[in-house]
Amino acid sequence: MSDGLTALPWLSEILWLSLTLIAYVIALKINRFFGGRVYLHAILLSSVLVLAMLMIFAHDIGSYAQQVGLLTWLLGPATCALAIPVFRNLRLIYQAGFKVIGVILLGGLLGPAITWLILYLFTSPHWLQLSVLTKSITTPLAIDTTRLIGGNPSVAAGIVIVTGLMGVLVSRPLFKLLNIHNSSAKGLSLGTSSHAIGTAHAISLGEKAAAFATVGLCINGIATAAMLPLILSVLSSAIGT
Image 1 (cartoon, rainbow, N blue to C red):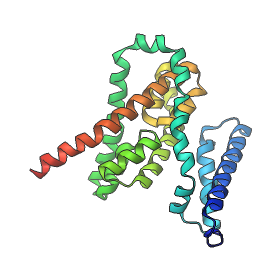
Image 2 (image 1 turned 60 degrees about the vertical axis):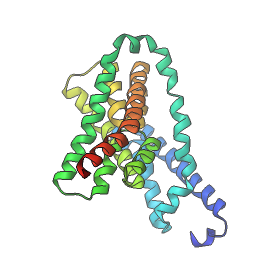
Image 3 (image 1 turned 45 degrees about the horizontal axis):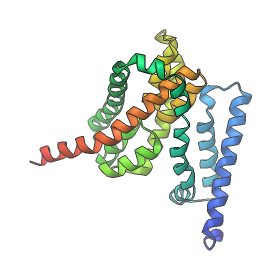
Image 4 (image 1 turned 90 degrees about the horizontal axis):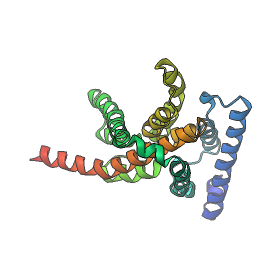
């Protein structure tokens, strides 16, 4: 199939973009049919469907990533739409003040640091250790930041998706176990630890949860993208000397 479309790259791009969108629509309908079960998340199901199609047609995943690059780019503008619940709940966010920023920065630091430590103790490849450091920020930021620090952007993108899905999967039982009922706290934790996927799930919990999730997503993403390359550069220079 791929060989037959070599002469028409634009046609291949349209085909895989269409198949990806169709896979997501099917996954969304399955998720809604079963009552929105978290373990049947549309992103998880659509990823499985796309992987199955790639295997059936023996299509290279690297080529696929380039052909659906438009979808990756659209993540940026789509994130801007999340400003609406933030604006509507601006007063509550302002009242929370610097406590919110502190929680976000702490959460954004601990998650990647613990994951990195586990990989370091198991002597995992250095590029993999670097690639997990962006696991809790949204995909466009993770790809660019990982490239800057010397990790593997493709692997980082996959880790970001897995992180988001796992965060959503464990959030409900974890909130129940810890007796957390405050929608602001739920949203903040989802946005900080599970980026855009967690924020999308927070929308289903209410507008207040969506607003705080968006704040967590944005602040953690910006802080990580801005500070991580600088911190690693300083550490590298210190170790080198």
